[in-house]
Amino acid sequence: MTDVPRLSIVVPCLNEEAGLETLVRAVDETGIVGVEFVFVNDGSTDGTLAVLRRLAESDGRIHYLSFSRRFGKEAALLAGLRKARGAIVVTMDADLQDPPRLLPEMLRGIEEEGHDCVATRRTTREGEPPVRSWFARCFYWLMRHFSEVALVDGARDYRMMTRQVVEAILAMPEANRFTKGIYQWVGFDTKWLAFPNEERKVGETKWSFWRLFRYSLDGIMAFSAAPLMLASLLGVTFCGLSFVALLFVFVRALVFGDPVGGWPSLVCVITFLGGLQLFFIGVFGAYLAKTYTEAKRRPAYFVKEER
Ligand code: UDP
Ligand code: MG
Image (cartoon, rainbow, N blue to C red; front, side, top):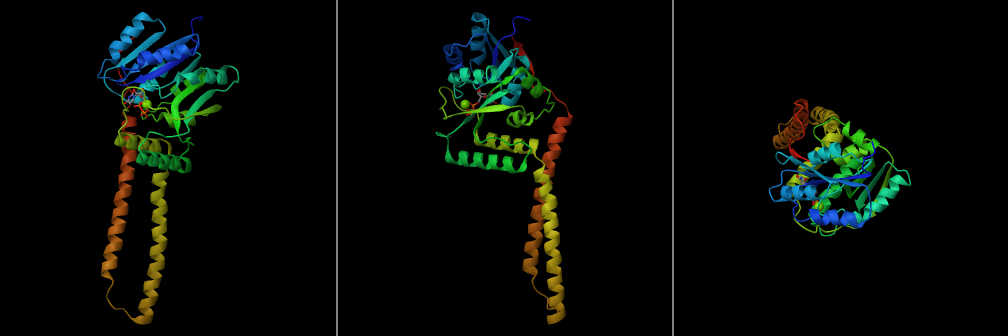
């Protein structure tokens, strides 16, 4: 095969009509040759698909997939990686928050320095609400301490990898795809590049606070069973505590007799433990629900149009 592109650029797009041409131009300005574009239209409701059709018509290097509805960024990345044919593949956002000017350096990291991946991280979170940054920091702390993947704070989904790494990622069969974790989990040697945060140039962010919150819970549950362990740990702790309390009450009754009293504190203890039990039933339920959706083996997306 002589027509394997040197570099496939995979771009998930949800309502990004305004920035796609700029992105292609910005990539071309880097002067990299042998590029293929794989755009994945994740159920956009604006003119994204029309722009993609037009771009593909006029430029043979541009390919796209269009989903039958919105399936989410993770599904779009999966579809893009499956379609990409390049010897090296990079995934990036459509909004120029992942600066194309880094592409030559990333390519050098793989082609000349021999790394398997070149990943990027933001050094700042400027232009982001403080609450969001705080939650993000908590999330990364939790993942670092309680999961099997050591996520890097500020890591972007802007990542270049060899064909070998792409195949490894595609071999991960799960339907609940938490890409940041998967990248880390498959291993391989990764070089990190840092860059200051870039503001979105066009369009608006697709991530509401709640969507991000749910996404972080997905991430924790996909790569950690710590919340389940916590139930046993707390259970053992409370057993120990109650045993000590029992001894105390027993001895006190022997020494001072047995006056009735203390029922308000008893009610507090019972409601506290009841709450704790309900909370952990909820945690079990969440894992069970994940197992259930996984067991149904539904496809991650459906493609309506492809080119
Ligand atoms: N995106 C997508 N499906 C979604 C959400 C986002 O395809 O459900 C795409 C979006 O078009 C963009 C990239 O994923 O190319 C990152 O989204 P965004 O820029 O909104 O995220 P942020 O940079 O604010 O984290
Ligand atoms: Mg963005």
